[in-house]
Image (cartoon, rainbow, N blue to C red; front, top):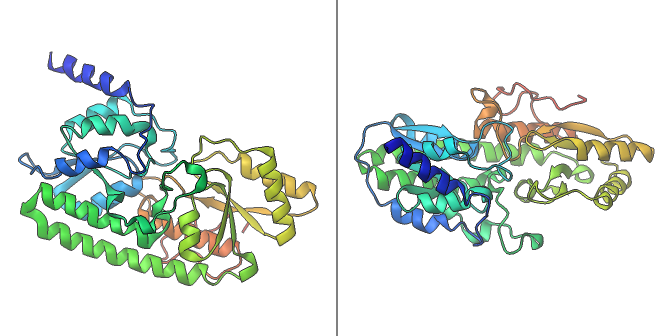
Length: 341
């Protein structure tokens, strides 16, 4: 009977998973902030579920030995298109806390998160980011651009959100969570400085970043690049022939030397740009594969948030003519060279 009720509840939750919420910030956040006042009375480690790798990485670093993290979406998974499964719901129901990015990144999970927030501690890590730091594109119908992790200094605010949630939930280890958060923040500050120094070395006329979809606007704002995507903010949007032709013309006119594919988005649109430019007598290459909505493989340096951004910074810098170490900030990159180098 217990298993039957669990599966029935899971099916009820999944019934609404395809409908994104409508608020500029996720509607689960309010319920989650109330739930976070509950304290932990179970067994350690705390069982935390995180939606995407960037969020999971914060929770692992801040939670340390007191928290075990289960990540729902792995390497190469597009969160814009992800639909929650029955197993996902059972994982979240069986855990103690749920952490998600918010800002409609996990739009197809919104209803599920709202329902779970009635009984679980559900935390949107972007809730503590000042709205002044968020981008609100005209074509996103009043919602904020969710790709905040591309600006390391803005994403660092999410560390405070995780630390606060864990401290409220488990006050007995508050000092540990605060110490871990401070250490992690220091690493992010070093990463941000590396980004400013490396990307700042790209010659002014080459500071144009063309990618598969508009996931890099925060990256461009933080590090002084003009960013153009073939698709819109969500990978659900289609790339039109007119957009491809516009970018081909810009590539030829400005002498752009490299464009970039993304690990969680099909390559076809970028390959169309390369072929279109070649048809006009201009040779542009694919400068490398960037991590946009998902990190690298679990267990690798690129499978951490620091490694993910180190990779992106290094590949973009080198492909566009700037100066960055072959193996990145810490010499740990396993795929530092872009395609064609």
